[in-house]
Image (cartoon, rainbow over all chains, first blue to last red; front, top):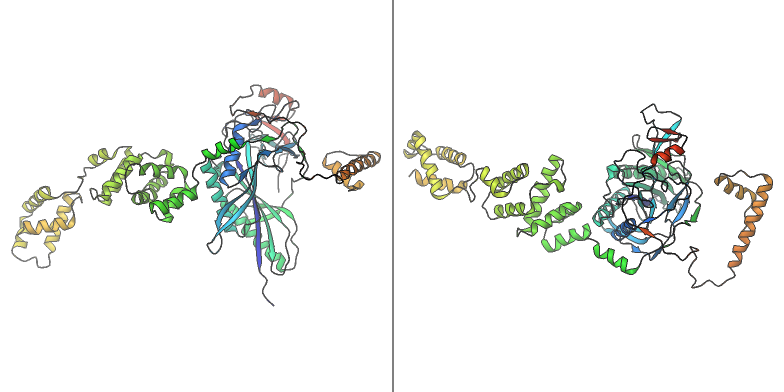
Length: 486
Length: 96
């Protein structure tokens, strides 16, 4: 009998906080650092008699995010009230586009297990509001196990995009590539900063298994993954769990499971899902978007990171690995492109950005926006190294000096006492003569022919290199010394 | 399509409603009459008719993204019986 094989079938739902100054349906601030319950008003607190008013910026950000995922913009979309009986959203319903979303039918490309490109289809992206945050221990830090939870409604009504994929993902690795690529593209689009540590991106995964004997396991929804690592581990765990159950002839139940990151397991969870009761939001007429508006947003869309990386490879001959690293960060790519305006070799610049710039940023835990070397100074430095005016070692010294002292290249070279083009000619001969004067015994030994192995010559070369601070070319030093001792 | 009393009762519970026997049988009759009426639409030729989604023909009014802070948040706190410092208190909810 043939061995049974299993194919994971995975769909991913992502919530991303869209970037705007105010909430989606009211004018309260979205500042995440505000004191609890200060960014609240009758609208986001669901008080009677209030009306939601849609934020134009959020509509535009939704369009940008959708375009970044290769989605089409719908000329007409609609908001619904989705039943939600839970104290973190005081209205008792969430306003969400769910059924008639603003953008639909996109895709993100990932690499399958054979390294081939594969499209993960994006079913749609819709706009909705976030819920408040619940704190399960007391505001004064009192014990767990108290009879109450504490709510901060600042987050309630913050704008979210929910992105729903088709079940095209086949492994945890593909899932991680899907979410990282998607995140990078959304950041490039300007729709969101998607800062993971600030909870701006949350994932749910629907995992089921198809067996080679024709059996299909039921869909299990896994929640509570807040990082790429957690998403990867949760999917891997769930694939193993369902596979084992199906091998044992057990039936996988349709359920919601909760990822426990500390224990590395999923557990069946009490669900806060209700009957999916929807009505059309009567306070928000359909959202119509004209072709002119769509074209205007499209015109503002920047080049996407993968397109940019391909351009670097094809037009600038930059190695793929370097191009991928530079385009991973929108601001780093912008810095690199700024450097190119100053006539340095793109490939050389790319290597400096990839190694030196990222090294010092990493060492100092700074962002590229805080980087002190101007693109012009880096371009000049790379050119001078390229032209042989500075050795690579000197180039790195100048780089570090410019970074630490916020200085220009000429100031750095001067303060480091570096002679561009190295020490040669008369200057070099002068140094050699002085060294010979200071070491008459060595000179005598060489002249008398006792230095058969050339050890004394090497000794003199070392002294000269030290005196020139490494700024002379070793071959030239050797030749000049031999000439001088004749 | 018809709903039985068990299904209607489940919907009522979801809506946080407790119905008496009499209210339940009335609700079943009322809802099924409504569903019967919907069934009559099936007799119509609706090809090329855009699905109905909203009763008004208004444009969705959009708002500029400018912060206007609500100044009387204290009034909102005053309306709640369950407040502790800067937080609203609710019955303890803890996901497993």
